[in-house]
Image (cartoon, rainbow, N blue to C red; front, top):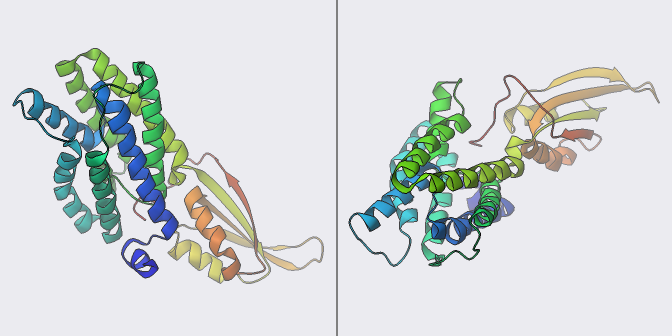
Length: 297
């Protein structure tokens, strides 16, 4: 099992568990708090929900379960092909597993006829918190919900002025504009509030979004540490030789800017790379300029 996870997905058991729990929490929030209030998610799932409503209201089709998850999976199929071809095989496999899990949970978690909380704003806030935390767990496991993640990464790879977030926001503007035209301004407004809350929680849960820096001190040559940072974390580092004040001995100092997720990986392997090294870390710092988010690892 461990070999399959590492070979196909570069996941460990904890990351797989986070992906499963994240998919469940996201689907639970959608079915329990968003759908009963006739609100809409953003991204490809939001488009799938609009198609579902169109089939129900215009063509009067009835379904025994919410088919938006299934529609979402079908729309994602050509995007999976693009991810496999143009991004990375591991990203494709992770995205496929996560979207399959979301499709399963969205289909089997029952949607109540009436909202379980009477106040609409409370529903939106609770739904946004749970869905955002679920998405954050998926992303922290280096997973992806497909959809706009794939579209955004593909476009941003070719145009550095555009980010995944900007592209996703642009798609959401179109979705919520349609919601406002077809179903009224209140539906649009509360759907936007849900998305804003969810996005805020994602950014504060997803460890790739939390910037940090590490300073490593060692008396040994830093070749192994530098190789790990470069090859395994796909980051660069600066190092210099210093003199320890206590014994006047030679010391190597390594400095690198990392995401919180990358810093945790370095911390786990520090002892096996250099038993004499110690690390000082600082999280939640601001980094501007050419610092890439490694979303496809």
